[in-house]
Length: 277
Length: 303
Image 1 (cartoon, each protein chain N blue to C red):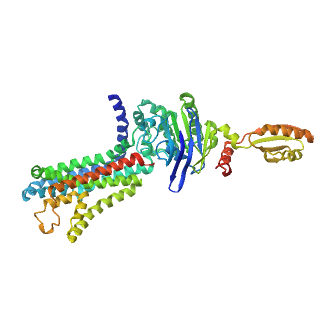
Image 2 (image 1 turned 120 degrees about the vertical axis):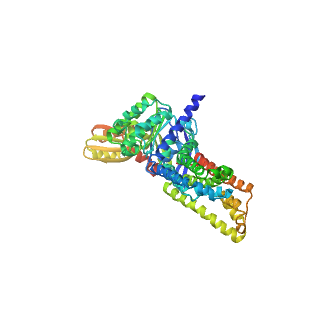
Image 3 (image 1 turned 30 degrees about the horizontal axis):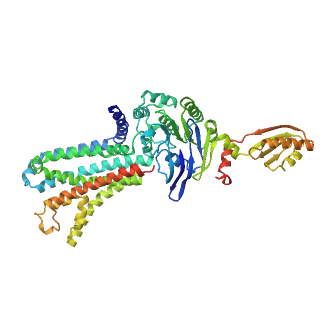
């Protein structure tokens, strides 16, 4: 039985290894990104003491700290975005476009295993690298804030990450549908910033209409927004059209990850059951 | 194996109610003009495309997402795409590990397809011909029982073509491997194939043993050498089964309906006796496979 399982696992690992070699064959960008991010954080750590002493240890400062390091427009997140979109669009998308995926389909592997190997290679490694760097940086820059407001830091991080994952999952789905590497790369970048801009529009609509609906919709894919409103509710009461409760914030985070899961399930379903090559 | 297969791409019917089956240990040629539906048929058989209608069974199972039967099928695609930055020997060794085959097979296969001198090259640096040879080696790595090859000998030089076709015959003889080979080079197919499947505009035009197809689709050509050919030709031309007739001073070339050669021998002899013309000899000439193909795909023959 164990021998059989080993036999089954081997084709998957071999395909994963081949795709990793292709995706990271020339990792100058990855190494540059890693060193740059690490260097930025190393320099930032010199100023961490003053940063902590000048900032009152409130939950909102923990939220701001996470946003500055792992927020939608933070430099490290943008590097991660470029890396993953490059791997998804040029690695996976080009495999579909050129037909390399047909070669993998001649091996004794389920379609879903091939997709898993491709996604682990395209997304898994970069994501693991950057989540490790970002979490380490958070602790180096402000250990006191992290330890005092751990739950807020974790929630803020999860809320930021879900937005990023939703964009990546939609890009994967588009890659499967379009089978065009370059097109999906452009699509992914436009989507990332388009959704971000839509948050600002939703805020404007909400303030103008005195309705929370637009903000609630936006919070489904960007729960960080709801978390920010929850944490800053006492500081700017005039602008608060909607102040979500803690339970609501948690629900929006759950909803956003449910969207991620649904998009992944849809991608797997399409790849396994419908994708014609 | 394939029953009532239909597949559409928008308004284009790529396959229209195609049925065919392969006998174990046979070599079947899949032929048809460009855009006939050959590659679509192959993709459906390999489980890469979902048919709109019909049933496909390979080794008694549906090939769609069926990893079990992939271990028994070798595939040579019309355009081969391998991960471009892989060293070819290392990649074949990886494939050996994927299929649970001894890694030494990789070198043996590179030798078989004459790629030993290129074993340290990356896939992307191979020329079209070398890539095709690599693709053939890749398809054979796991000792498949069925090999499906789309334009297998495309891009190969004549010597490489001959050696690959010899390899096909050898594999059939030694391991009873079944082959389905799609190709445009018909004389090549006639050397190795037992049977042909002819498709055109997505429809099955003909299938069966090559000898049977010759009988069905080609007119038998008979040449008679005689004296006074003009007079003899005039009389033979009146026979109802004669389709075409040309004569010169020494010979008469006659095309008759399939299976009517014997009748022509008897009738021509009788006519010659009657008009007192001496016949020097009668011989039958076989049509080429190209002629068979042309006849089969002609609109009035179903094509």
